[in-house]
Picture 1 (cartoon, each protein chain N blue to C red):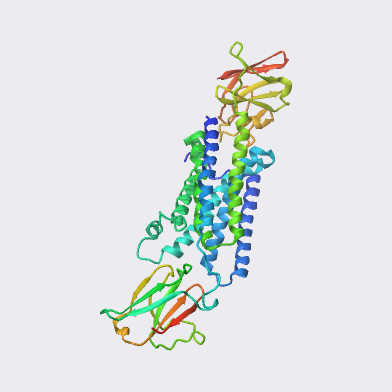
Picture 2 (cartoon, helix red, strand yellow):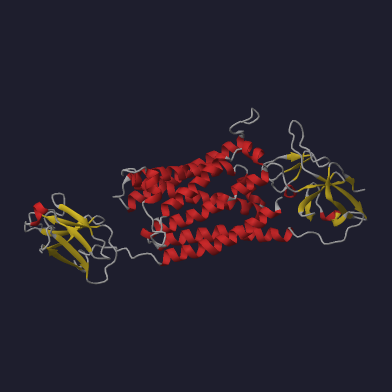
Length: 139
Length: 340
């Protein structure tokens, strides 16, 4: 009555050790690198290349990593219609047009709404984590 | 539920136990919030609550899972076992609060049901570090709910102790799932070696003491190999059993507790009828064998609980010849032997 339960208990913990233990260690060892400081604070190098393709009916921004960039799931790309963004004066993106998320690991494409595409604006990369403008680009 | 059952049979020990437990929970949550506010003043109240409640429930589960093996390894921990069920139910409630706040924060703002969002928003089953860790926590919480809901003696009686214990062994599955929930969830973003080290240490502790207690008991689970005489098996010398205490032996596949008291010997099943606690680790108090886990009592001569209680454990025929204790391996209803 009780002995089989105790035997099952021993086998269960051996199983827990052999299955969950290695998964725990692997999960900890293969963690992604989380940047402790913003790229702007580290010198402003994000390793991203921006190109606007206006040859199509809808203009599109191509963002391509040119070097190994740690994952930044919190990076967002904005279109500054005024084209006069100065992060040192105003670090907010409240008045800008949100284009999409840039993860830094793979190439992404972001259409610019037609009514704003002809305006000579400025691309702004914003970090939600750091709550700051990472870089600005005049295409 | 029968009229014989009450929600909680309160007594002084249970009140003290619960007061200490709830004070510790309140103290932990307070310290967590104060330290978190100091270290990360920009943390939102929702995030702080999710982390405080989640870490508290995980810590409490470690305590719950430590009590059983610690009590088997050292009888000084037995008082902690007495009201462990309240600790388990409280662990579920704290975990449920954590899950509720997380559901509210991460899954309630979309256009699908929060539970659907929880179970379907991440489908990266092919990746370890992107694995959907939230459903792991949800399944573990569901198991803890099942255990909390069936923790009452009503369900223990309805299901019978072996079935109830088998069901409650699911807590180990819940622990494994919660460990992965933590490692693949919060520890992917919180890279402090201290936190990772504590979680690894906690896992090593729980697995270590369970295996230690389990393998130590395995030695006592070996059946007696001596040949039977007239159907009786020699178990030990009389003077190896302390007065009002027992010696345990495996006969016919199960443990039997052989008690010595008032110049007599009596053998009963080692499994208490309540939660299958080890009667042989208890002692005779007021003329009754008293279970070390929750104090259930049985008369050594008959195996019956004193009135008005109706529990009964199987008894075994026993006799003493030349100072040796002989026990018949098949249970019988009634017998007791004079030492002489």
